Image (cartoon, rainbow, N blue to C red; front, side, top):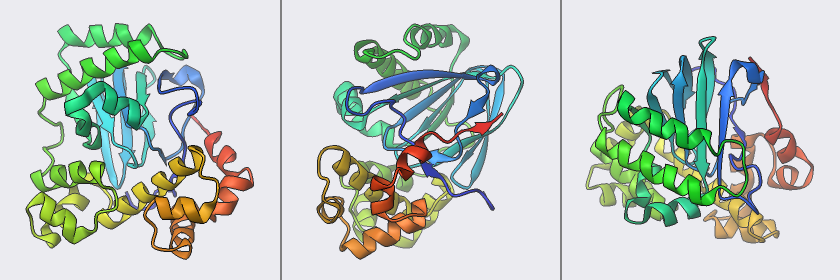
Length: 278
């Protein structure tokens, strides 16, 4: 999307140390919305009423009541416009908890989705989400909701706006297991030509394969820091950066600041609390 502002890192979960799942609701009465952002948690948006326009990477996507969108970790997104009656639920789980819940289907959260749910099945999902919205300690109920939605995604697998190319799907699955894989290794895993893999990925995801891999690496560093590795060079190494200088360049390009400023100068907290008026 030409001219889109630089996305912010805004975690989905309200407290990553105590919470593995969260559900929140959005309507225009709320009075604010998140700017373009990305995070480590996979996220689902369920449109209950009205319509919305989302910016997802460089793409613009229209969504109506009864539709479900899934954003994988690292894919930037923003609510660009909304009808006056828009009402949606946003659901997010930590990657670790999502993998525990979905087990054999754990890789599905790495793949973006946009599907329509039949009215006969929509209400059950709405009721489940509404019963745990904005609450803590909802892991058991959120797991049931996450499993239900995953089953519905597979059952109604036709993707609005066109299916992902098989090479893109294979690359996303491979990156879910090994975020540090280089392009040629990803092409081998996807059983495709490297140039074709890069081209289809860019078309489908709205960002280049190189940029997406870089963003996953940045998220791994933030996760390593949050899990206790407070020495920045060690956290960068754990995330797969070849050097701290490379890590510094990535932070500057992706977040507009150095790692030290992000973690130590309150900038992260200011990013997290940023909202835009509706």
